[in-house]
Image (cartoon, rainbow, N blue to C red; front, side):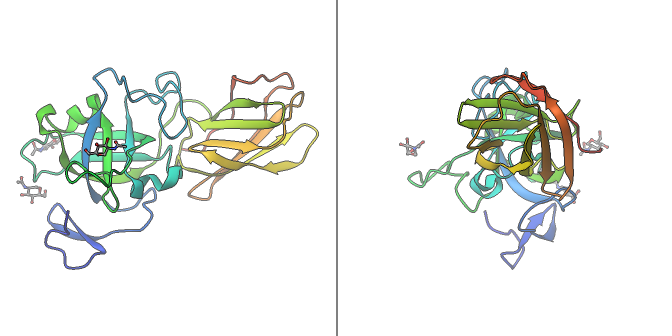
Length: 253
Ligand SMILES: *[C@@H]1O[C@H](CO)[C@@H](O)[C@H](O)[C@H]1NC(C)=O
Ligand SMILES: *[C@@H]1O[C@H](CO)[C@@H](O)[C@H](O)[C@H]1NC(C)=O
Ligand SMILES: *[C@@H]1O[C@H](CO)[C@@H](O)[C@H](O)[C@H]1NC(C)=O
């Protein structure tokens, strides 16, 4: 996809205007251009789980309002949990006049051996939506449409949730239902008899430490890409268990 009538690589044509493309799209950034397709069926089958490490997206509150991102948008999973407003670009005859919101939950992998339908290859910006979301912005038979999008704050019900997995020597925590910027950049954990311990990203929004805090109540500090931090004290009681989720505080609206 070229820049349409725009003469610089840093400019993109959106609704007839040349806009400067920001390197990392944060909440509040301008509309940008991309394309959208869909995967899975009308019930979202095939779109659960995914490269961000989430599980049952219905149980976790994301539902069908999710998307897989191409490499340049996915950024190795850093943008998992970020939220987008997406509209079909009216240059396509297949557009429907509506706006959707979707949370990044999966990765649309590049395929360098394909000469067609390789829209998730760098440097393309691409949303692979659930089928119900795609069909709100365009007719089914279009298959692929040009879109405009922007990052928006994530609206969530309830607090940030922490699902704890792992074993005796390793604790892996899935951080989900994150409001505000949605994109978690740092997580710290504290046991009732430890100080704050830095966690490292394992994959997607799964954060780990190489020790276990069994028998201690757990507190978390979650920092988002906008620099805001929310602390949740003693969210998991001292008898917390692997496989369970615990709910903390939420970023301000
Ligand atoms: C698309 O929208 C732009 C901006 O609102 C408008 O100027 C243009 O005429 C529209 N194009 C079509 C094909 O409807
Ligand atoms: C699209 O929908 C909005 C809001 O419902 C309406 O104001 C606008 O006129 C519609 N545009 C077109 C081209 O149908
Ligand atoms: C990539 O595309 C080729 C050609 O269509 C296909 O044979 C191959 O299975 C694809 N690879 C993956 C990982 O999907």
